Amino acid sequence: MEEKKIDETIRQQLTKLGEKYEAMGQDLSSYLDGLLYSDYLTYWDYIHLDTLLSLQSPRTAIPDEKIFILYHQVTELYFRMILNEMEQSVFTDPVGETTFLKRLKRINRYLDHLIDSFDVMTDGMDQDQFLAFRMALLPASGFQSAQYRKLEIYSTDFKNLLNLEKRDELKNESDISVLYEFLYWKTGATELATGKKTLTLRQFEAKYGKEFIELGQQTADCNLLSKYKEHYLGNEEIVTEMKKLDLKANVDWPLQHLKSATRYLQRDPDVIKASGGTNWQKYLPPRRQRIIFYPELWTQEEMKEWGQKFKRALESPHA
Image 1 (cartoon, rainbow, N blue to C red):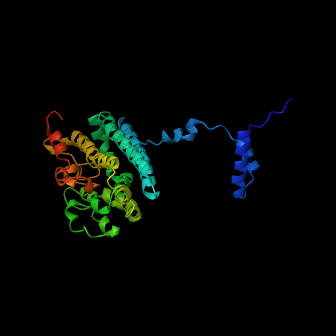
Image 2: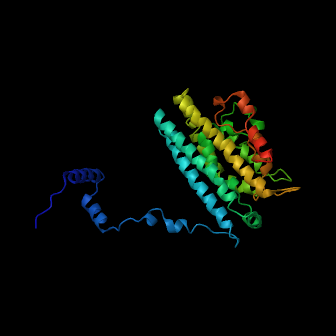
Image 3: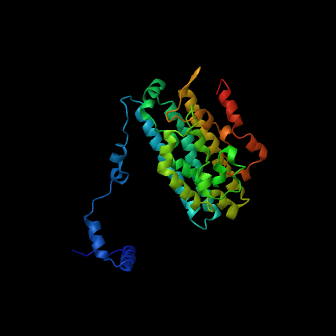
């Protein structure tokens, strides 16, 4: 039988592999044996499909609770994709303008999907079913999304995430651990009656507080805003994408939650508390928080009117 000749390309690849493993003190032949005996990779094994589909564990027998779980799991996966882009933009230096712009566009595309997909949950759950199973979730709340808080920290300086009433007082403060105590989202996680921290907030801080402070310290001089100021000042394409990110994260995304809360939790004349006890009426409206990642990119009038037109849209009977 005629012996088949090894393709020159394959020969070159084997040589490179041999050099790679030799540099690590390893024997290429052993790795080739392992490849010979290993099974073919399947799609379902690669993405751990069976495990993924087993991760929905409703607390009640109410059917639409599974929709609620699935949607929030999908949301967290999108946050993971966004953070993947942010991590590479922030911790890789230098990042060229083309690459930085590409990553901003990816982030905005992911946010578009999230914003557009919110109706999947709000229109995909029966209101009576939601109100029936929601109390079984106490004190868990979507407020406890650590990945979203990381998205905020990667995006801007800590001082831009402060409670509105504290921004002037702390404008010269640089200690992240001090600023952390006055982050805006903490004011939304207070008991409606007493103003004390909810269990939801206490749980959240106990698990992630140290991590948030450390991330704030790590990104103090390299978050997306810092990167823009240092490397891309005046690039109009980058400015456009950063402003889009600002609006999507700080107006469009909270607005979707506000619309959902209004639909499910607002029942005249009574207002139903959110499942985590959070003060959603004050926490969710963008006009109340005025969180703006990139104030340098907006006019004073635009910042003054932050979220106002969306308030009017909600108040419209045709909204």
